[in-house]
Image (cartoon, rainbow over all chains, first blue to last red; front, side, top):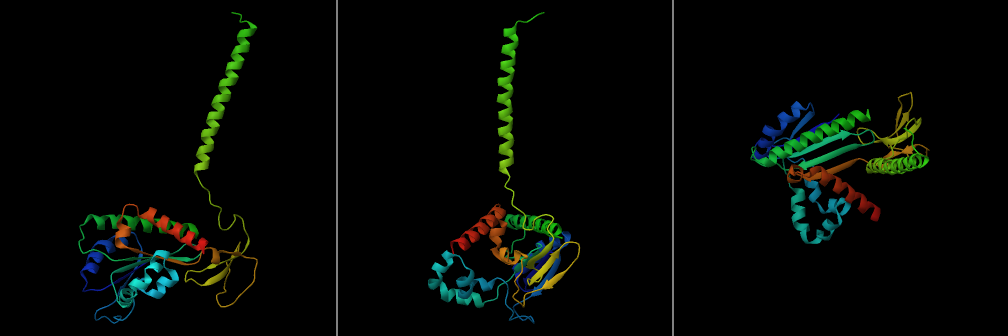
Length: 140
Length: 126
């Protein structure tokens, strides 16, 4: 089952643009969508998002590339701040290829819905979802 | 009309040389077409009957029987020694992080491939 989890906030203009442009496409593709409200005054205000953990020095030490590790000492104060902050919108695509679960996390979205970047993103995202669906069908 | 022996001999030689030339040309073309496709060996060999160690949908390690029966044993809480094919170590659960601009680019699929190759290279290098 291909699952898309969207972490967003109702007061955020970026999230509103995402809801307008991406969610209709996902409904057309017949994918399970799970919307999580985070940040602000929501019940899950202090819940961490999926992407901000990647800024934490501990994460970079464990999973980061060699280039990241070289610059870790210089940037550690900023990285600590960014790692503790909650950022949205974040999209997580989750699927099972017959051997192990796979996940792709995409962070950020622009406010302008009609920009060519958004169209390219939606095109890529739709083709990616279709590819992932094929992978899952073959594994069953 | 009667032809001489030399005529038949030259015709035979010319036919032989030309057929050999075109035969080799066709064979080389066919070989190049076949070599372009890199066939990866399947993780589980076709017709395999036995246990396979892998991850389930939630990411926990399981032993699954490949054959006529559906059987799955959770093994994440125990250390077992088996002769089963171990796919759990070969391809563990993965999570990839990317930004909006990366996914909106035209060469997104190429970038993902390059990223996966880079990660594999780093793992090999230690």
